[in-house]
Image (cartoon, rainbow, N blue to C red):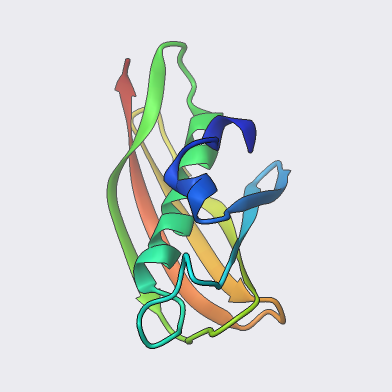
Length: 128
């Protein structure tokens, strides 16, 4: 997974995939000069990049037909806690995996497990 995101926004923001299982995928992102806003806290947009990255990678591991791909259709995010340093960890889990759409929930937490952001992404499965 890490190799596929070379020379992209994902790599530039320091996102690192950490684990994948039968029903989840996880990654971490640093809270540093690449990902904070002017007040020195994690930028909400950076959280959304992490969430969309996880949802997109997960969706494309689940596409059923050759010659199709999962692409983002809609994403939302609720930011519930600010973070000033360290790492945030995101985990995507499926809510629905269908032939034409998928829905994923992504929870982003601090290093000690406190909720930072909860996001949901809807993916459209398209023909390439």
